[in-house]
Amino acid sequence: MEINGKTKTCGLIGNPVEHTLSPMIHNTLAGMFGHNLVYVPFPVETGRVAEAVAGAAALGILGLNVTVPYKSEVIPCLREVDSLAASIGAVNTLVSVTGGYKGYNTDMEGLYRAMTAEGIRLSGEEMILLGAGGASRAVAYLCAVKGAKRVYLLNRTLDKAQKVAEEVNRSVGREVILPMALSEFDSLPEQKFLAIQGTSVGLFPNVDRAVIEDEAFYRRIHTGFDLIYTPWETTFMKLVRKNGGQAYNGLKMLLYQGIIAYELWNGVEVSEKEAQIVYGKLKEAVS
Ligand code: ATR
Image 1 (tube, helix red, strand yellow):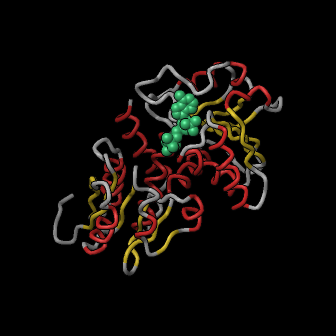
Image 2 (cartoon, helix red, strand yellow):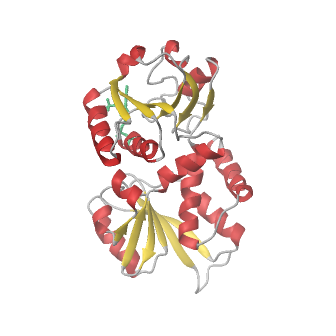
């Protein structure tokens, strides 16, 4: 693509941003659609996110992704916030509107689309969610909003699991999230679950660890979805597969959060065929 006077700009604000795969996603899509658009990383210093958002609006930047540590801090800088993003309290995509930006959470819509693409449903499911940090808190909202029947929320620090459960249950008006300490997994009902791994345990370079390593736990899982994608096959995934379950990593979540952002910015629909081309490039980059 030739950059000229009509080129539109999108980008990523966060700190750090050097290792992001988002430029690969968006610049590949722009090339495929023939859009005159570039996507670039913008490192933003601590305390300057409001200036960054105001500056982006002043420059007519079409859209931004937001990453760590600004996903919550950016919210007061926005004109509007989508309802799912508002209840989660985290935004990863800004779409230009009159006078500023509207915030969305395409991380969670992306996870949902990734799971749907693999034939995994949330509605009516009995689930286990591992972790109660920022990522798992958002997943807990997603599961509740998409109609999961029950979600056992297991965390090392029980207090945090209880706090997330209270918040989500209050927000959706039913007792869907049930908090438990990790060490109590033995008292889970004797049945098979869909499990989502949302802790940071197992992430490169600590690739030999899983948040629960007892195989008895994995015999209860029919499908395991890890939000991590480096390494390609986490110890959690290995243990799920060893015990007869299906396992998936988080790369498709990354793919679809980007695709949904691209669709919001450009008013297009990315087909599955196009998504697979981008996925191929991402896979090559991480493996
Ligand atoms: P993120 O925003 O990626 O979710 P986070 O908010 O720091 O990151 O949350 C990290 C999650 O991984 C938490 O659930 C954390 O458990 P605690 O709430 O008990 O801290 C979990 N975690 C990190 N290291 C862990 C470990 N060694 N064993 C068990 N859980 C761990």
